[in-house]
Image 1: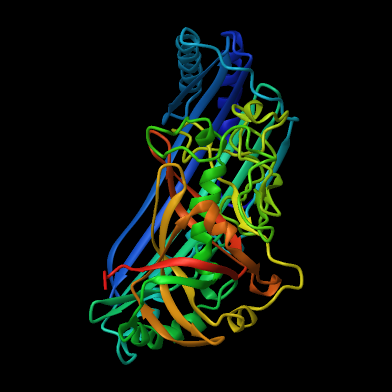
Image 2 (image 1 turned 180 degrees about the vertical axis):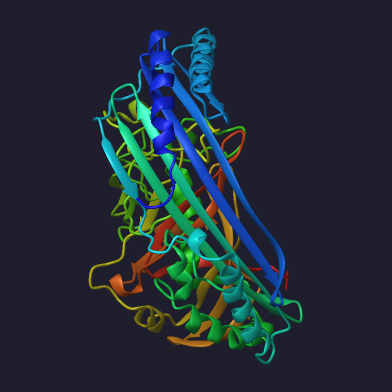
Length: 487
């Protein structure tokens, strides 16, 4: 691992904190020290509009003592602070034990290792002027194109350095880097943005490694023009061919969040919501059609939720959530695993920074393609009367992750197997199980791409997490479509 990391200064702090926690009776105790640096640059019509570069540092201690959990954190990275933080965490656990007992966290093998995400060029090693020059050049090129009145460009970069240690002997050091470039073009009250996703790569991503930005930027003016002249959709039921750039968000909201075990257990009821899934549904609930297989993992190359180890010292894993349309798994951590009947955590614990407690957070959740399956063009060719959706846009879903509505950046009419111009006002609305039950076919490996969200909120106080979702192009039959313009 190159560049500075908190490990060198964190190790003595960890030993001091863990020793104090052990002496005060903690059966389980863990220590985290983190440095999270975030840069955000926004340009309007080629000129810098805003920018910030911030760093959050801190340490925290989590303990389990006498059937209760305790957590405490500090922004003071000193040995004295580490010991005091451990003592406060134990006091929190003592207070909690009077309110009821929780089962002991499930065990995890001891791990000692150093891990880094798959980036080549640390974005923070790129001079600030160079980081601004590239989106400025993109903006100038688009502003020179016919029909483009305004351009908004942004580049977000995050570098997360973390050191973890616990009483069992685990000692891990990690570095994660992610970037998210985005460009929005607008004219006459209509806007269109790039669909290139945030990713666990470095600055090389903006130079075309992992996404063809040159090709996408070249298509934006024409697509914007077509969107401005799009015909309003007629409400009704349509066959939908959904591109992975749109479908990933539906996977995130209706499958990813619905299978988080803390939601299933009601732990998030007062803020992020619960789930229609019940604790006993694993292995029995028909979630969708037999064409639906969804995996969860922490190992996807360049995934936003990809790690070497989670924030409870659990090594990254991969497992099925839905297999052949049946719910077969859930997302849990060392605190909730026993409720799932598991003897080991799935490794889903994550905290936004060291100043926040780790909670169950979504791993990369992805819809599997069909081996040797059809191309996007072949799926479209099977549709007599339908719509092809590209790019995620607005969304709405109820607190139980059932009733939802989604829109797309672009909606293309499909007639007799061919694209026939863009439509406006397209929103598809359904119930989660009805929608996934309408899944008629998924594309092959050649249609599979990885998208995702870099600001998924959950918890109280709210924490943000980043997560990727891979999808093939998919065909859904007879889905209700409404016109958001009301016509």
